[in-house]
Image (cartoon, rainbow, N blue to C red):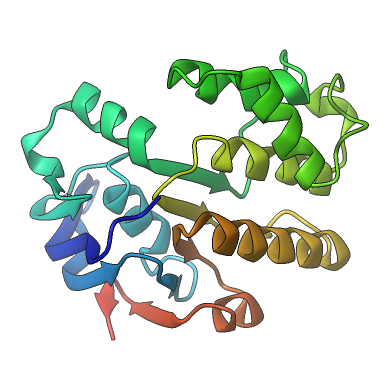
Length: 224
């Protein structure tokens, strides 16, 4: 469960990449703090740097300038393995493209991160989480046989099985129809509240962003 106080700080983050026209600046001097238990939406038009920022906050990418402090750890002080260990202990993910392993069943997809984290009774826990998202009849189905909404619900169960302090969600309803998206949103906020996690999500959906306590709006790589 989350500890009181700040769980994440972005300190003067910048990100540049090389292009045929020279250095391309994606993020400019981004600064903010996020408190334990907050729900925060990162919004902005396509190309504004939302997903790049989320990747840096989660330690999946590294900034060109500045640093991120996640659960009290300066990510710049950790190598790739160190960041992975920190994520395994504290972080859950939900992606637009689900990112389930196609050769594993729904149950096996949810079990995997729990086993990697050394969770006891991983199978029982996975069954419980899949039941909570309404997939008690889909334990042995492979992702290719599930609808988009069902796959995203498997992803939610996988994200929450280790009871993360922080959940990062990148356009969690972007690949879903309205009905499936609405169900995923209700599950996302319901599970997050029950788990007392901090939620940081990227979305272009104003209704989804409006469900969060706070919005951070990016324009041209700058925080408005």
